[in-house]
Image (tube, rainbow, N blue to C red; front, side, top):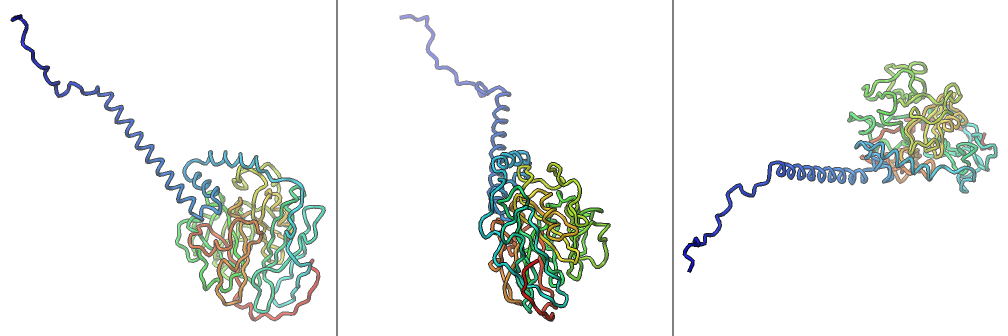
Length: 415
């Protein structure tokens, strides 16, 4: 037996700090965990806000427009612009061709009314295409009439230019002697509410509603101001194209500081860029390459959905809206429709919308009683009856004294 071998002893337990990681490993793990949590929270934030944006009609009619609006609000404008540019390259407006049958309305004649305080119906629009199609540019009565059956709105349809001949734009002519205008403010445009007149149009005010249509750009893009409810919401810019509503319900379009100035008779002023029509002519420079001066278009394209508003020599309002229009096309159609002064309103597919409404006078109506100027306008006539609608818009309603007008009628060929 070997008595010199020491007795076996089990190893001692490790010390309390024997397996502690070096400090840099500890802090690295903490940083990785924090970064991971931040990424997860950011992803959840974007996912949740995008989800609700896609469900929010005030962001646009189509899901693509809602996603684009959301992207720009979250610092991804360059990504949105790139995506839109690629889409536009793949879907440029086609040239040549003819529009679908029935694009110019029905009926070859209209009624011309000679009555007290009634404006003479407009002459037919000469098409920009040297080869007009049957019915092109012919006016047709639309929307509610007066109690005596006198039309207050006429609509006509023409091609935007001589190149994109398969597209049709709509034109609406409004008798300001029979109609009164109102600007409705939104929470998004101009912001800073509440306002006395905002969506939805109340049931009482729908009893005389004849038409409603979009206003202008987001205020940060309008290069102009906004005045309503006795409040200067955004400073008015001298020289800006201005849609002006007076307290008597009259509405005009002009250059601020030259054609119209602030008085105590003005109820609302909505400015948007500069005039595109001045003294019955398109302003110089419209044919230059597209620029942000006339608005950021989808994909940076030149021929897109546009809308505009003009005033005629005798005081009628003219609205133009439709697809595949350059800013020059818009001005040209306004002039052809009789505008002596004209301005661009909102642009791009989701925001160009004009509707007329029918129904007995003094009876509430809703969006189901409306009809879009063009059947392919993505926006519904119901948007102005929805509390969620966040953009500003104009309405045209029967004047309270319209039922007292006497009239005689003669049926003739239009123009």
